Length: 503
Image 1 (cartoon, helix red, strand yellow):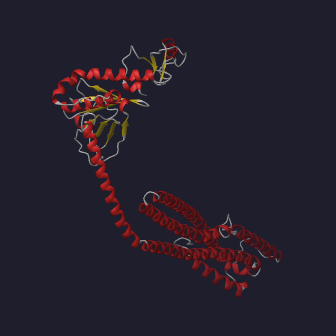
Image 2: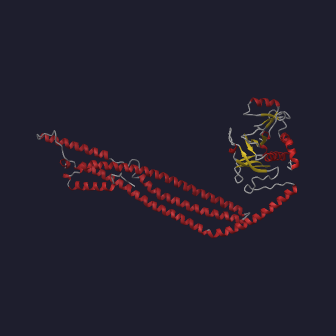
Image 3: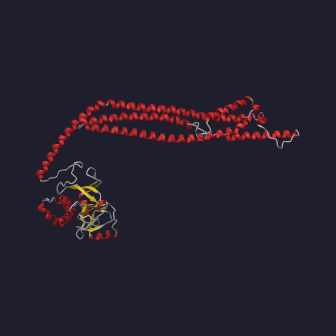
């Protein structure tokens, strides 16, 4: 892990330093170690930079490992919680369906054992890896311990050498010699700088030992990685043993589940047959189907219709005819739903009386059979659709109006050919009848026989967004509040929409 750049390697530097040191110890008076000092100083600086880089890398490694173990512990806790919930569900289900309940309990027990294995593996791996790394930060790489005192040691040696040179020059001057151009060689000063060289060499040795300790800890991390691999291997082997023990039970379970599904399918067929018989006896010819079984173009009676409609994109100003995507829509007594296809779950769902059908007298983007659905639940929103034909448009209109009428009056058009020509003449009347029926029911609700503010009898003004009935005098005060607080409509003078009445 420790490296000193492409041009400086630790083993060669250490060996070279030891060789120079041995020569100096054998013949200190003739030592050339002073000439080796600049190179030695450069090597020490490289070692310090390398240890600093190693510390940065190890810090990132510790951070990523802690994150890994944190997610592992959270995963183990989630598995244990899921296992407990499965056992509870299985215990409760066993009181009604013992076979299915036992299945849940067995699977919950398996998950509980797997979570125990995972928790043990994460805990042991955490101790194995983080213990070695934490030793590095608590000892050799803690704070600024990895930095050397080379600058101070080398400065002390240079100061001592300068003092010795000054003393030698004074001695030569006292002897009457000219020292103006005299330069002292390393051999001349070697015998008088032995103590200072030993201090310098001692500082280098201590720092090399510190770097060697870091290498030793690094080797320990390699051994810890091997232990981590063994912990992972043990986890997967134990997990495979658990799964193999359940293999025989799995085959038996599949057979039992197949028999249980057969019983449930037979029960469902009987219930569907009884339901169809009851509907036929009541004169209702509706056959409910799941979204994956329904025919996208089917029209299952005039109080339920399903099919594809072209929808104008939201916020479009002017687009081409081909840019209206198809949406799978359903209208029945439950309301209006829209999804991307008949196999997708609805992403728009509006209650039956929270939308208003409106014809489009003019062409929109060159399309002939357009209509709008104005919905108002939490906010007012308008959807623009295009039917496939005039007959399809009439069917959508009639189905929506029939569903709303059936909810309040229990009357549904037959949709027979002889009644088709009467439909258009009753379209405008149907909407008015629905509104009148809603208003009558609203007035009969408890608390609506008097003004919500002052208590006057027979209020005939409505605050749409507050959902209260008030008298004409209080309606003036509400109008002063502005529509963002209270939007006032008259039940007798204004043309109301069903979506406004049922918010």
